[in-house]
Image (cartoon, rainbow, N blue to C red; front, side):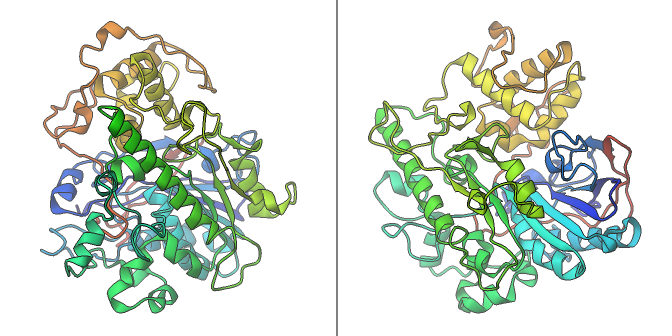
Length: 517
């Protein structure tokens, strides 16, 4: 929307080590979708908080994050709806009056960090990201490595494999799999494929080609340049080391992106959903096995890339998910520094499954973690509340005795993830209220949230996600009607921001505005 972009930063105690994280938050491919995002935290910086607690690889807890706890931690916010890839800094009628300059924002932030925070003297830099931020990490890591020639630069994106290739009996290369609507009718197709077949010429609204690998673009014809927007086809041409963290049944891709129903209305639809989930998992595994597993790269790397792909139907990999007894964060730490604690084959883990009892006709998510299972119709009220509470906790929204208004604000920032977990406005309100009045322990798994189920007057209420909701001082509805949706892998996207700058105080990562561009 033209407001400044920005980042949060906490100065580290090891000046040679930086961790830079790109925030996710979907994208938009139509004017209607982009209009709905522009007044949300992924479309403007007006409502960003002044500080935040760094978690995961940004944590300064050395028990939780031993190899990176002393790093300078940088959290790059997201307000451009382009997966941090756009270079369109001239709003026009074609871009509906919006900016799509995510890559330019990233470049400006890096230059600021070099000039003022010593990034140019770093010897080890880890670039991470989640969802759209993971896409951004994949597509920006080579630029960062070229800029920091004296540093080892690697990336560990989570939930950013957008998208797998279609299977042989589905759509032709280089298209992604059919959507649920076509699949359930025994047909092959999706909106993007159909538009190409109809002769529509894709327009680079983001001007993302300017930030894409020239080697990838050279490998495809001019009328298939959009192939290089897909991680599946761009992977080969990324020169920097990659540790990909991606579940086999990405719930955002299956339910939001391809419109499989969350709650099948009958056994016939449930069968179709299970078969679609199975197909998506097969496509994901195949695309990973044909790329990262066999090191299908155009340029030699110092060591092999890594992959951690659990049999989960989640968007992102929860920290309690293991494959063969191994957890992803320790593997990433060991892989980044090549410490040798684990054998090299443990850096490449793709979970395999047999049909589960009661689902003998399908190979569907089998990881033993509770969050990983496909639950069909979503279960009863208690299960839905607990699933929503765990997702709120995972996103960092629940703090012991924390003000519920902060919990609501965090919920607004994580709409997609909460939708995937089955959250409604009322459930979020009750869980946030519970956290305000109770101690929330570090480990949420297995804990009960004691809420008054009688207060769930309308458990199907999804006001948080609809434009007709009224804003309130203690609720999570948004009068802006911002609905976070993920753009198709090859959709047009929108970008909103110039550049802002942030400074820090431990343990919080703080934000302050400084115009860069």
